[in-house]
Length: 227
Image (cartoon, helix red, strand yellow):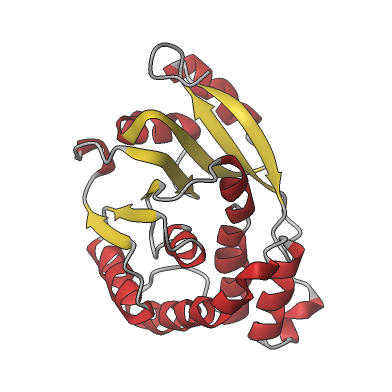
């Protein structure tokens, strides 16, 4: 359910969202985040990048949702030059948002659909993001991206995420899936099908969104696992 905040100017809503996420120091990034939203809205008319058409809903369900993991990533991986692979990135979510917020991170946005990777390249160019690379192809067929963090959002089941993307995780790296709160069945299937398990589940707060969201860290038994 959307809140009445929807009628407020986007800049005001974004500033309030950053405060709610304890990201007040990121206020200077508001103009770039709004420029990304404008690019998404413009390209979506021709390329159908997302089923969400209303820019106010895009702000919440795409931008705010992607922003919600930034504080957690910063707290748990507080180092420069972090290598992030965003799997099934679509229009660059959360990859481009992470790249905007953390210029010292290197982000690869992977998607099988050419028009989506073309949009990511275009948006990164317009926004001046030197730390974003878009790669088109099948995730399971690519050579390893050797990423510190392999991230997915609204991509696939946990089992499928592990099957197609686990080889992109660098030794000691993490597999992170953004999910709704109802992941009990997926958790059970993950362990039964792959042997992997949910190492950590962190509840996320998405400003202006009533639905509950979480960030799951997945791990595997054996030498590559970080447990």
